[in-house]
Length: 314
Ligand code: SF4
Ligand code: SF4
Image 1 (cartoon, rainbow, N blue to C red):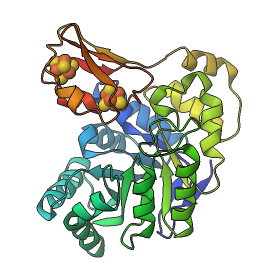
Image 2 (cartoon, rainbow, N blue to C red; image 1 turned 90 degrees about the vertical axis):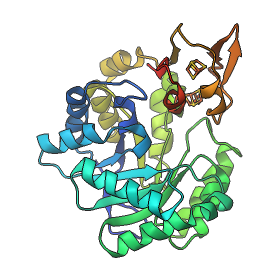
Image 3 (tube, rainbow, N blue to C red; image 1 turned 180 degrees about the horizontal axis):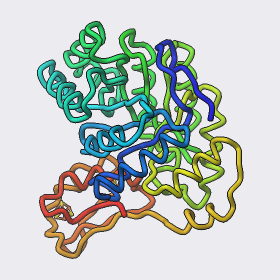
Image 4 (cartoon, rainbow, N blue to C red; image 1 turned 180 degrees about the vertical axis):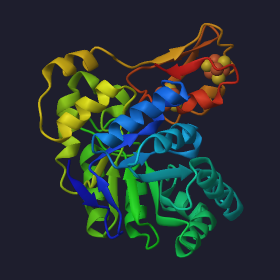
């Protein structure tokens, strides 16, 4: 495993980052013990970087894993809060739920442009003050858009950017893969730490998983890459790929487990999930919601808006 410094911060992370979303309620919904076991397995295999978010509801998994191992990883989390008070509550919630005095990296969740960043200026200011007090080590933002990366690259208070980049350019909201790569290079040159998301296009690149994995792994301006993993087999395979090892039997085993968006047949067609999918991947047909698989990046965010718990990534 290689370890990199995140931009100009003092934070050193493994190049492979475990995306904890996958084990949690929005996706695999594993029991806490089982999800924690996957995290522990990754930490003891050399991963020292975990990515989560307040909205993922996965703090209990991380807390349990931390209780079960001596490895102390770098933890990045995110919040949609845009006010000072809201961000203060998010930070306190994370510190308490994780049992940590300091959160390593706190991000503004899903910033689209300079305007969204401006709209979150109070929350950002709070995070910078929290950094001065030692409650946070680095401040940053996650984004699915080229404009978001450009805005973060030019913002003096942003230390770390978590951009969406993958071989197919899947999920980039406002441009091509090449435009996103150019924006990330600019941000990297500005000294921002870069850790990539959606390496496998939310699962849509699974049929070409090794190629997609290597594509992001080999980008010289990406310090680390977050990959969602929900089994110890997936952890082992990603560790092997990160270290340049081959494991054909495990490739076949893991490759047979394709992910998809599942909608229960008791869907009432209320439309709440449709309004909250930023990729316009959902639509109504015969009074039930349907998914357009080629548009869905399997983020699982829509499931948070279903009052009847009938939508999830499986
Ligand atoms: S349908 Fe749901 S899982 Fe798919 S992109 Fe939209 S919000 Fe994400
Ligand atoms: S929010 Fe739930 S009940 Fe409403 S349309 Fe979506 S899946 Fe169906």
